[in-house]
Image 1: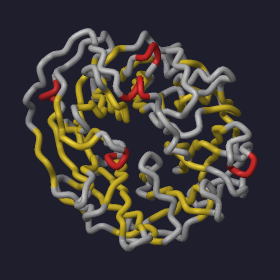
Image 2 (image 1 turned 90 degrees about the horizontal axis):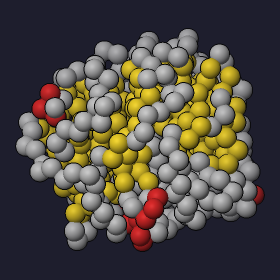
Image 3 (image 1 turned 90 degrees about the vertical axis):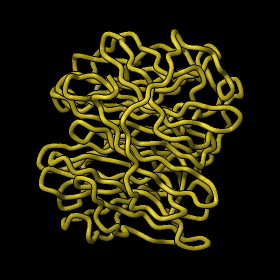
Length: 405
């Protein structure tokens, strides 16, 4: 989507202090060898039921050629990277990146963006599968029925019954010619094991244009979160749930009241365990940049008041995971003057207790840093992030969860 839209300077440079500013803790952390090569970025992490971690990323392979690549982490060792797709017409976007999900049978499903026409924002979501642990991949197919030369992206995937996968994405089918005259929508569809898709469902007919969609599955059913957009440009985070086969109306997680006449390119992150749901998001409401976390104990039907977890100057770009106790670990980018940023993580409980923040890595606040990702692997957290520059590369590390208490 249009990740080039401006962000108000008051959000970018705000350094208002949160309730407390504890010193950074020193925690056991080790950087792992990364399977990604130089000139790589846009990582994504997913864990499966066996404890393996799957990663996709993008590498530049030529002057105008990119490849979507995959590797699997078992213990401390990565599988040999495989190439899912390599083309000159991939739509490469710092905020809208490929992702992978593993089904209970071991089937892998991945999505990426590929241009569909000559227009600047003409691109489709394409999906492919692997049944041999990522060694080879099927030919890609278009996820959605809309074939207009417009915007389709920011996909979230989750597991559905029958070893199938369901996806939700931002869809520009109402935007005439892809130039923004209409509203962005949120669509959803099921992807069966044979690669076929079911009927599409519109989850929302007016959403923010270019913030990530997030999804998770609770004991009560799936929950999808995204940034909404009202007629008077309030862009707060909402959730929809699938209950008894039907999707609910969008409900605000919290009424931040962020009025902004441009997409902030900063979507939410979701995690669930049973009917406990944790959501993290960025807001610039009241001229104050904040990263917030809220919990639900009823499958996302209602959320408790939010908890602020940043250190006063966040860039957002959040990630979240839940441990076995239902406590959340949140990642985000914190701005560090003059132009740097740090990938930070901290624990937060449902009662609002905050662990000491830990800095995973120094990086840049620029778009080239992308969105750091985190996923839980047993009693540890696996993190992936990009350090941009002439030798830009995706880095990977492991952090003890116990050390964050």
